[in-house]
Image 1 (spheres, rainbow, N blue to C red):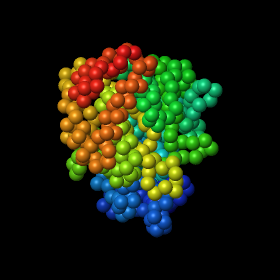
Image 2 (spheres, helix red, strand yellow):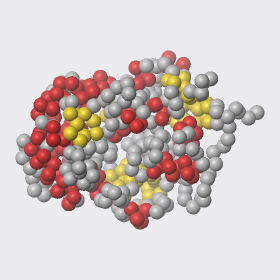
Image 3 (tube, rainbow, N blue to C red):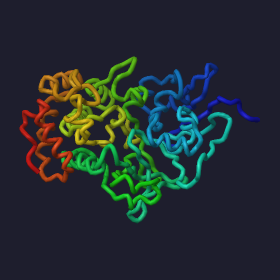
Image 4 (cartoon, rainbow, N blue to C red):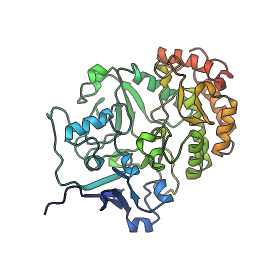
Length: 412
């Protein structure tokens, strides 16, 4: 017996444990209903800090419940467009897209089941491997496996262990700038996954890589050897805001680094709160104006732990290296989120730091913040940095008041 078009029945599991079902109600709204046995076990394994706080069902106004919508490639991004074109899925059909990608989502959650009354089709010529993984972000990226210093898309039932990011216009040297930013973070003591810059020739079956320049490769922190996965969720999921509100502007709440700092402390404890403070300091010091809510995540490397940790650093890019986002732009560069009740970089001084630290309510936050800035400056010499990034950061440290107080970055 065929199902009525429009039905939705998706089973959600974590580490093989059923955690709930996504279905469509009589009003046409998608609803996530937590599994009663899972809730009775104190939600072990944990899916989200948001469900721990509120274990009741989640109903969407349109599309999927927000936690699950944030599992998918964002709307109008190159990856989502490619996947939908290949599979004949309408770009706005999140339910069917979740069904297609449900076995290879960020973190450890899996989603399987039925969405609508037709089987997914492979539209278009099969000249390239089908993309059946989900990654967030506007930049075109692929989940890949490594074989003899070459990287290719995973075959069926095989997890990608790396993320391969594509650069090109309008961001020349994107791979090199991201690698330099990540190396700076590693030298400063941050947890940074293994990464490298590779030539297009090292990407075996990635569509049209030759025109994109070098590629940035980074090991996935949510995928381990032997097919094991580590669960994680980004801050947009943890706070259940739509992907388009990742820059903090939401009709119900406004988010800033100040409010996120308090959130991290409440969820993960004082030590992780201080780590968040250090990471915000690095975003300012490195001129990263795109550290939005989907570029921050919690993860659960210890499955028995009741509290998550901040996930390893990812998507750290000195965005001011390109004129459109730097000090040459028509508008003064601004942070992705508010800091001490300000966003524009020229407004960031000691007063803003004090406001930020007070509002986060993280103990010893101010001392931690300024010590971090000193550390970033101290480890800068000797870094291999693209010229565009070096020049942009020299200006950056002269124009941001709280950085200018430390003097210019030492010469390379």
